[in-house]
Length: 494
Figure 1 (cartoon, rainbow, N blue to C red):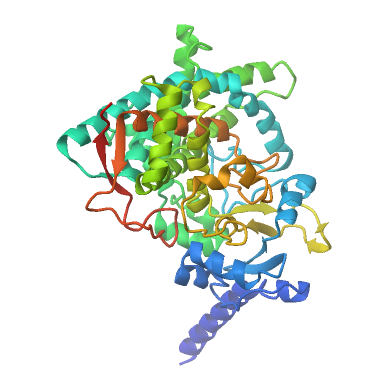
Figure 2: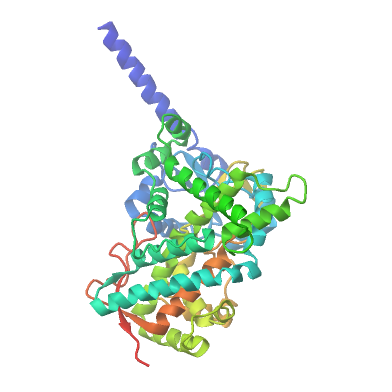
């Protein structure tokens, strides 16, 4: 009996301690005088994201607190200040950047991914960003154009096969294969042809990384402190074997290029990163470590593969579902490109296609939100942001605000003509972020998107098919269409 009482007491104490741990921060916003939705002791407000989905829940509370500049949200036990005022957003990204220089990361990762730009903080981030930035200059991106064009030709061959066999095509799958091929080519000079060989080693390992163990990820979402314990037990959140594989690929390519005298002649990301390392090395303490080089090469894969595939698939789908838009896009491509694949310079002139990409990014941006961590106490417009507070910009809700974008569910590229853009707040469209910590690969991603969409529209017309579901309904937890993005391709007759 005594043993049972002791066991029961220990269990009750453990439950009480866990309850106190999960609710320890749930009074933060009340003390600050900031409104927030009612909380659950375990989920905080995350149960609302589970109930409504991350997209709808963001819109619901963005609209509920429409008269507030900020409101509170408890991401399980973590307090998050959600900023809906666009002037404050601008101050956080630019004017007060020194107070919000870091991104919030849910968990720490092990080498070789640890030193990537998305993960780095403070002066370490600034050091690596300064070295890597020149690899994304206009001149160097221009040198990558041939890699994109080469993969666009392979994509067209596959679409030709789909047309000849009458196959219906899911654009998300097609786009993922293409963007992974482009990443392998522009990043490392590798020709992997995922469209024809979807199970190649590079593609298989990349998919493992962007699809971490869902059970472990869910546990870490609520209790991040367990990350190190799981890692030490041999259960890392990101598959370590896949990370090591990519690090070994990078090392092998570097050594082969040095041995064969090819360094500086391939014009891919790794080549340019090696150049940047050499150039930076002229200043003491300015060179990249091998761990930092590994990490940037890895983030180039994972930040550019899935996100670009999302934008590409939604842009093509929205164009296909709107015949007037399709007609204008094809007319522009015909006028600017003729029968030739668009070059770097020609891609810069595809203004209507750029508008289509912007509008797709508004409706289904790969980034649902943008976060920052306050690194020092700050006041913005008389609102106090305490040190270590997580700050979230509700990107999807801003992009769907009817006061900013009338008829927000409608796909209308005309929103992005210069006259219409001039009537909106400059921070009302943020698919790539803003300020010093914006997306470093934005120009390369846009070049890739314009070249491949133009190449497709030159030869083919995407049209609805028997599996098409439109309007789309987004998945609850990620920027995917619940019913897929299905089309057929018809060959253009000229």
